[in-house]
Image (cartoon, each protein chain N blue to C red):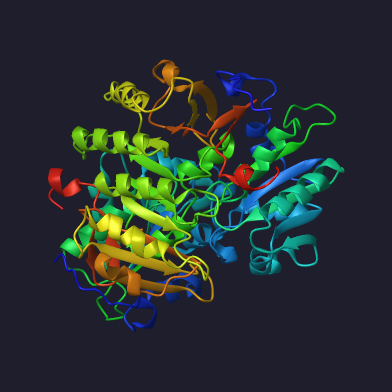
Length: 284
Length: 284
């Protein structure tokens, strides 16, 4: 069911309903699957559209930790929660609910498209040949509701580490061969990208971050600024700054995201700043 | 004034007020500069915190097109608008207002930290030695309010093109040497990143996108899926899908963002999906 057909221009295609739905759907709708980003943590950083969707759906499906974070928003709504690494189960439960005539929100922390649930949900729908947004009677309505990703929340708390070109790399080798992760880390370091590291460390994966540091040190000096944000916009929020050479000594866990500066990044007081280049052209 | 001092751990540092302010400041405050991301376009995709800040500040400073987009939010509030490429003027006006005892929101479309105003504002403050968030009488209060970046808004409209590692590269060579942009594009293509291209084309910059395509074609086949989103969540929203070999023929402008798939990315109907690798481990 992996089609390579291209429509050329979706905006004028009659079967492309997502764009219209994005702005027009303010109430309950059956056979609908909303893949919703709940942002970094606090309700203050959720979008109006995410709040709206969570208000009108029949059921909310998600990782139990994220459902706890948004409990004040969804209150007594019906939920389906599973634990970590149960992503396939969550997607299947959400699709089943939508196919059974309900409206369902499948939630992700951050943005649902960045290392989160949108990819898996759409991949499973594609594999099973389930029609989406065609308007036909048995078609599912799909809307991906974006959220503020951890990389933006973390960057905001650090100042402005991302202002120039950056690469996002997950250190989780559960689904990705480590060789490929190493290759990407090396290429990103070589080409002087700011590097945002997702999933830097867990209880079971404890050596990858130091290895990543060693790879980057081939291309950048030990005093390159590094920022670590853990639990952004949550009660356990913690912000640390260090140099690249000391990264392996910092407190990092699965709620952390790590920002490695490029050759222009500097720190000033408690801030981490990557200039975009205005000082080369203007007197600032 | 470029200091390389590091605090080690900001969360326990008494002079680091940003984290606390992030959640506690619900009303007017003098000498305050809020660097606010207004998201992709429609008010529905702004965060509650961004709306709150725009509600209580004395003055809103921004690029005139963005101020027009958020006009329903800021209504009769005092504004200071300038045209494109006048970023330094905007930052100076915002800093001046805050130093003069006002509270000021400096707005960016999308997220203020991704190719936007947070970097320049903090760089200028650092260069001028203006103290931020120290709590001292003459110190400015700074808060970066994150927003949904164009890369997440565009990805949501395309489906899930970003679900695995990605690199964001701006094709604007106004502030960045073209050689460096080429080097980054080549490295990102070689290491099989999904590539998000910001500022792909303008009236004055019309050859860079085709050159980028040629670089990526060294490493990827011509039938690699590409998505182009223009004016995401705005009235002029337009979504196009094509193959890499035909990218140079598509309609692209300064409001467009271009997503180049990696070796796993596929299209299905009107969607563009980058799997994260679940199919290698699970029956999906």
